[in-house]
Length: 198
Ligand SMILES: Nc1nc2c(c(=O)[nH]1)N[C@H]1C(S)=C(S)[C@@H](COP(=O)(O)O)O[C@H]1N2
Ligand SMILES: [Mo]
Image (cartoon, rainbow, N blue to C red):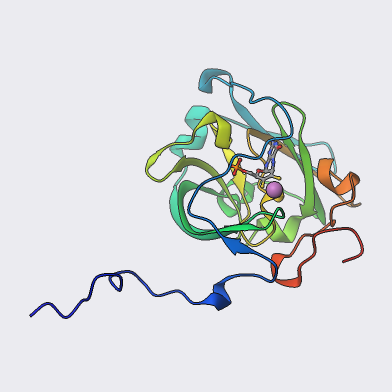
């Protein structure tokens, strides 16, 4: 006897998976503030600059040589769509930052093309953030941030910088592209921190 009825084969999710003010989508919308940069992996590099101006760099081969994780997470865009259980492959920021000596509290994320976004360094650590280079088992599409993007799914998705090229660590908090334009400096979807002052 088949005791699994159609429609109940997956893990059941309830409405409480949805942060306030969000709706579910099955599509994967593309949201980019400018044109899609096309970065060849042979020219790609990721750099971390510390508050004392130390520089640590990885090229594409070095990134791929690091232990990768498969990550399944819900993502929440401030334009109100939420997509459940998106699957990524990438390298944890814990792995990348393990050998970086820093006492900084804040990170500015920089992308090819000039996009920036800011967040506390703690939000990049402890299994909360990755440099992702595969989506759904395929190399990440350029329009979704390929060859590699930041993935910080516990914050609104504008923090997940596409075409990521580096972090600048700092003792003081500066604001990134959307944060300067009036979006919240932190952006917790569960607290509905959409705009500055929320
Ligand atoms: N470099 C860069 N990263 C970016 C953006 C952008 O415009 N440029 N948009 C952000 C916003 S607002 C969202 S919702 C997500 C969208 O990612 P997607 O296009 O893969 O859905 O990327 C974020 N990262
Ligand atoms: Mo967004």
